[in-house]
Amino acid sequence: MYIIIVGGGKVGYYLSQALLSEGHEVLVLEKDPAKCGAICDQLGSVVVRGDGCEARTLTEVGTERADMFIAATNEDEDNLVSCQVARHKFKVPRTIARINNPKNEELFKKLGVDVTVSSTNLILEHIEKEVPTHPLMHLLTLKGGALEIVEVKIPPTSSKVGKPMKDIVLPPNSVVCLIIGKWGARVPTDDTRLEADSQLVAVTSPEAEAALRAALTE
Image 1: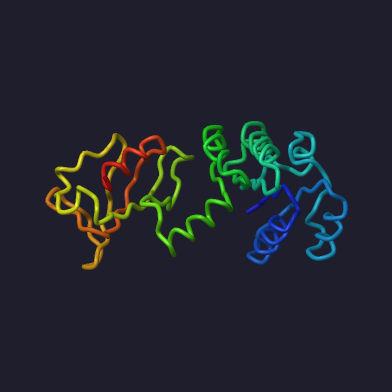
Image 2: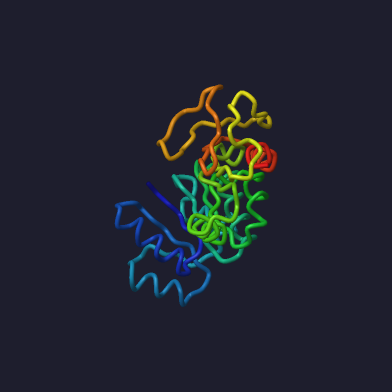
């Protein structure tokens, strides 16, 4: 695949290094001449000095033939703009954006960025796995942000403990796909009863997350 990476900082550098080792054609766009020089010294002529937000620069590096476009700068605004230009002007089929402020994630998804990566949220989710403090955890985003796969842990205090699935009223666009308990994993039926500390894997929309959490944990 031909992959363009905007941003030659640590994230862009190590990402391009890994992708090159897998045999991909990689080009890094970086505005800082010092970073360009460092990447060239370490990885060869895979870097071009330029602004990944400018259509002229993207035209010069052949963005129209790119299979994937990754915006990995430390500026959310630049990452959003460059992904928008790549998607709408050059029809790149897959765009990925690094997000520094988790509050911007919903905006990026609404504006059509295929995949968003928030280091803050990733760290928080790893913390929650070790020290569970939140009953709902994101696992995967689907269909450009329209749906999400989440994991919900049923606390012992939930009024839903012991009730069958047929009595649980889920919000629209939500479905429980798998229940994991001490007995293993199973696809739930209408008669499957919820147990304390069991984990439910569900598909839902971002707008229905709070309602889904309430329906299962309160």
